[in-house]
Structure formats: structure tokens, C-alpha cells
Amino acid sequence: MDYEKYIEAGKIAAGIMEEGIAMIKPGVKLLRVANDIEGLIEERGAKPAFPVNISLNAVAAHYSPDAWDESIFEKGDLVKLDLGVHLDGYIADIAKSKDLGENKDLVNASTEALENAIDAMKPGAMTNEVGAIIEETIKGYGFRPVSNLTGHMLRQWNLHGGIIIPNVSTRHGDQIEEGSVFAIEPFATDGAGRVVDETNAIIFRYIADRPVRMKEARDILKHVKTNFGSLPFAERWVSGMTSRIKLTQALRQLILQKALYAYHILREKEHGTVSQAEHTVIVKEDGCEVTTRA
Ligand code: MN
Ligand code: MN
Image (cartoon, rainbow, N blue to C red; front, top):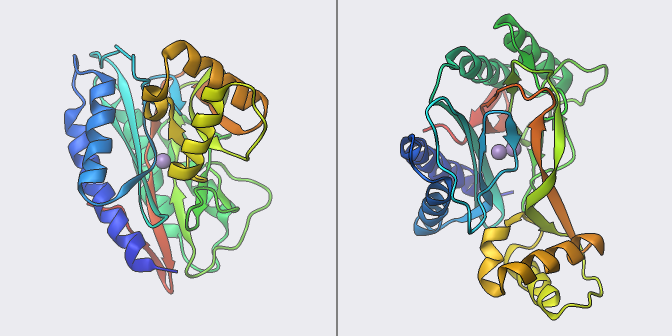
């Protein structure tokens, strides 16, 4: 395991997060921020570990503007910026919320829950104890944690390395081991505390080679396998390969054939507003080291 690369990726991600948060202002296009951030990642010699997620208000995760997205940030929005950087597959995963309205407490709830969770990360601690701390902190603010979104272990080239860090107290947990790497990501909401799938998806991941009829679909599958491997990619990253109509058809075919996995946009069940905070940590002998701290 290459801890140096985890730490270097974390530093790059932390710096770009600060720049990205500063770009988010009313009137600015989401597409511009996504493109600029992904450009900065490449400029600094790294690669995006997944498409920049820019999720607004009741959308908790998995929104990333497509190539034709015209939407802009508006006064009142609560923006979750979630970005991933990797160096040779060693991933840094970081998210912050920017409040363009009056959701200061909601943002503080997830941020403080993250800090309290980080303080509890050490060898021998149980993942469900960390979840209980997150839940308690968020409820202390009068909000609900999102129970069906979780933190996750990171492994080289793998965003979800098996063990999860729940955002609520659960009956069973796993023991946290020295040397393991985790992304911890509390979500807080004034809604029900659950997310549901929207019908559409803009982020995908290669699963396997499958026979498909359309030539464009075969070309896209080969391209994403070669360039992104097991890591997620955005529709935007392949939109130059064919026309918009054929792109939609090709992606639909590939999902139906289970050649691609579709990450559906996740929305709060009761349309509650959602905040998020996330850091990546390496578990050390007597605690943990945050790789994504600025
Ligand atoms: Mn993330
Ligand atoms: Mn994550």
C-alpha cells in the first residue's frame, strides 16, 4: 500500500476543494465549475476518481452536469461539492457544503458530525459506534442523518472497499483496523432522513464486456473500460464521441445489458434540504490521519 500517494492525492483534493468552493456563487453555471475543477485535477498531475458531484438542495448526491447543462447556482441554494482525486488509483474523497441561503445550522450539523467521527476513528473502534456519534451530533442540531447513505472503505482503484461507516447507530458493525483507509461522509437533513433514486442517471461505471447491437455503444464501452476502468465516469466525459441522441441510446443499451452500472441521482425522500461533509482518513496506531485537510 502506498500511503504517500494517498497523502499526495489528499493534498491536491483539499486545495482544489477550496478553489471550487470559492467558484460557487449565484449566477455561475454548474457546468463551468465542474469543468474547471476537473481541469485543475489534471493540471496538478492527478486524475478525477469520479466526476465532480454538484448536488443542490434536496438532491443529496450523484448529480454532475451533462455537456448541455444550463443550470446556474441561485441565491438560497445549499450546494454540496463532492470531488475525488486519484494518483495511480490511490483515492482522496472530499465533500463540503456551501450555503447560498439560510442553512447555516444544517451545514454545521454535518461538519461537526464529521469532526466528531474523525475523533473516534482508531484501531479497535467499531464502525457502528462511529455511526452513533454521527447520528447523535446531527440530532443535537434538531436534524436527521441520512440513514441510507454511508461512508466507505477505500482501496486502490476501488471507491467502495467493502466496509461502510454508517451515518446512524446500527446493531452490527465492523472493527476498524490500523492501516485501513476510509471516507467518512455524514449527510444531515430537515427531511425524512432517507434518499430515493430519481429515474435518471448522469454518472456510470464499467461493469463488464457485453454484446451490444449499436456500434456507438461498443465504442463507448471500449473507451470507458480503457480510460476509467472500475472508476465512475460522467456522461459529459463521453459526450464528444457521438450525437446527443445516439449517446442517450447507447448508454441506455449498455445499462440494459448490464455492461454499465448507472448511479441514479439521489434525492431526499420528503424533498428536505441536505448538507454533506466528507474527509478521507488513514487509520493510524492511536487515531487517524486526515489526508484531505487543507
Ligand atoms: Mn465523496
Ligand atoms: Mn465518498
